[in-house]
Image (cartoon, rainbow, N blue to C red; front, side, top):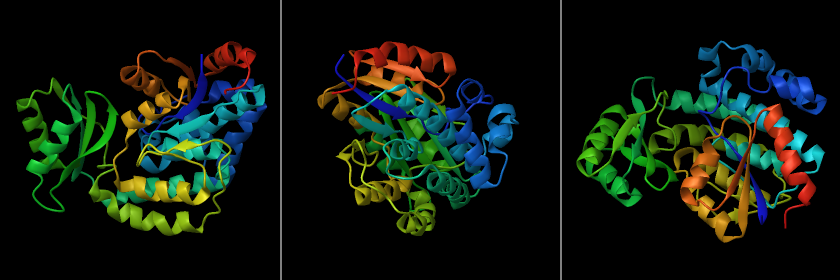
Length: 318
């Protein structure tokens, strides 16, 4: 194996019960959930562990819940001696990556992502925005289709997540997403799957959320990172605090360039990826981009113990 990178999941990976076994096994993980409850002045821990699921799915709850779980898992791994050469996160997961790289405190990140979630939900009234996954069509074709069917600044659709070759997520107004989905099928897409989300994330319709979040991000003390962060907005590795801030502001209404991020990581010598937090979505996407990689999940106590067994003994990342 070559270099190790830590990846942090975004919205959609949440599930009731996440993190409970970590807190039961390691006090350092339990302390993260306790801190989240205190900082947010809300029972985030019970929401993560007991639900109800419909409340956990609310964006302003989902985002701090996923962040808390990822950082709880990360601190266990770091305390065990895992060292990585880079971090990256998908959408919301970029905040977890920044905290892991010591660019932002956990407390500041928790309050910011709760605000981020609320602003993103409020940016577009429920029922007016949509997202869909386009399967089996080249990204350039999807971009062209979106441009062809968009009619105005409000009735617009864009390619929002470039997740893997042949897996692009589109976002925009309900009508524009429907038009784009039909045309994508005509152009050769195998499937177009509507996503169960309540807002068109990473589209121009999120501009009000970006405008609302930017003052909060500019007021935070960002620090230079211990290791480079590969940003969503351009897949470039950055360390400087101001570059981190800039990327988090821009990503709200910009596309997530995940395919390019993985390719850049691989080009830079990373071939081992640890998905820190809920789910295994990112590992699957990495393997679709580059088959010759090692992808390990680290969201449950059992998974984390396996990662420690496999990676810690071999020494630090190059």
